[in-house]
Length: 282
Image (cartoon, rainbow, N blue to C red; front, side):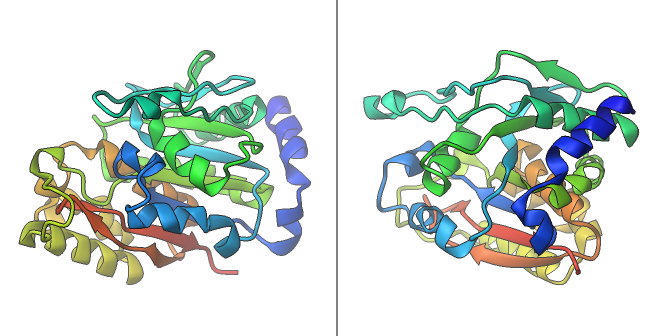
């Protein structure tokens, strides 16, 4: 408890706290090519991020679909290295660098909050940097790479409710200037991808529309059980790794939060870049 108190003191004083709580966000990061491909509409959206979301976070907690562990794990590093966790892309992709400061105190705070809320085993990874689910969108959103970044893993052998509750445990961070950012993909069935410009198939459109309506109507319990309540839930997400970051962002905002669709576009026929912002009531 002493550590929790000291971390509270460390993160309490920030410019955001005077203006209210931070919103949480879910970003569909789509293809790694978004880092260099100017034709992807979501890239243009993320490059205007600081014009739209003017509050500058004290630190960023990223829950990425590219870090899956048996139990919750945070990276505890002083400087994040760039992880190239993709294969077969242009050589220029492997020359990109995004090395923001780590956020070891935030990592400890995350661990304390999770343990205090019933997540008994939370691990620390003291070598891991940022995977492309974090650095591809962040290099467009905050290209200066000055804001400290911490990552938290997902557990794909658990369900949506588990990740929603994970987010609920992290809710106090919103009062401390921390941007909680889920990074995944609204639809993520790579085996069905088509050439850019291909029409969106019915199953992808139906799932994407169902999710949008459920979020905007505040039906978060339906989203927690998307695999049984959404049309083509298993088709849209054969593996839930890229969807669970959404549940964490939802849970961190709270059950009465209002969802807002902040960007929507498609690529490769079946890849939805729908991204959402969650605002808790004042």
